[in-house]
Length: 209
Image (cartoon, rainbow, N blue to C red; front, side):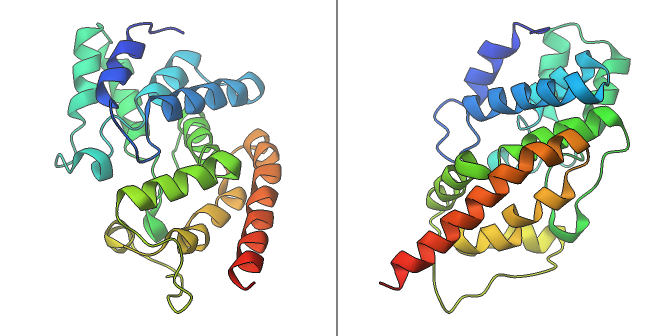
């Protein structure tokens, strides 16, 4: 790891998180990003730093900061990160998250890799566990048969949405496989996507028993 000081910093930032955006989520995204970069290339320093910091200023976890990234900025200052590197990473951090119809595609390979790495941790077995952890942390129902998924939400609508955890599969998770930026991530996503489809089939089967 290029930035060993990141580990205690991340443990501090995500201490006590039960929403699925904890310290270990960040480590998995970091590992995913490195795995993708081994095939796709890119600047390893930028990829690793952006992966490590991708959630430290997430508005749904820490509230809005008016477009600023105070926790990332603190890490840059405390670790002597150059202005050029910090600027590059900040541009990635602003575009990583899923925001409904207003989701941005990063304009650099490094950004695309980090976005893919984060999306991979939102699908498959881990993604299923995280979806229900997040829903529970926000007081959302598991499933309401009469409540249908919402399609084509804007960023504001997506952020305000309080739908069920099962609906979240259709509003985001099942969309991610085809929205991966890199061939490597698309290949990695295929089995995870299939696992989610199998889970949903089993869920509906048990619900109707």
